[in-house]
Image 1: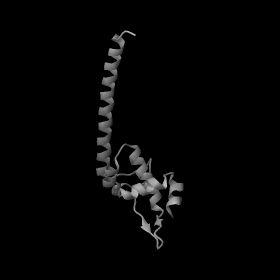
Image 2: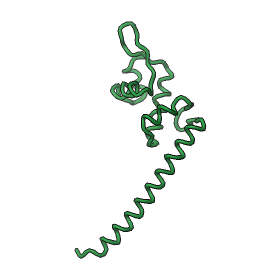
Image 3: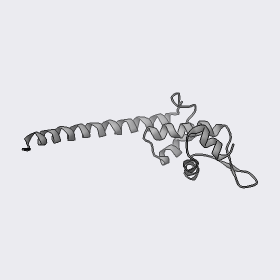
Image 4: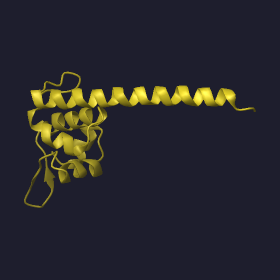
Length: 116
């Protein structure tokens, strides 16, 4: 399938698909006219990329773990390396949430003391 069809079937713009390709996330071959040609597996791969980006991973992180990802969101099977990366990302998000809670508490305390 050509890039336009992949875009229509995945909801990802052609520009973003070309970006995924440039980042080494999406494999493509060229036909004799130079057009990008994708196989059916590209649909699943794009869905995996979207799921991992949605989880907060960078394209660099995704490039390292994508080869071991199998299946589609929400049933994305994973190798130990991907699971470890996701668990680390989850810990980082939890730490960030805790810092934000402390900041909010401090701001609320200050705002309560400032005359309006």
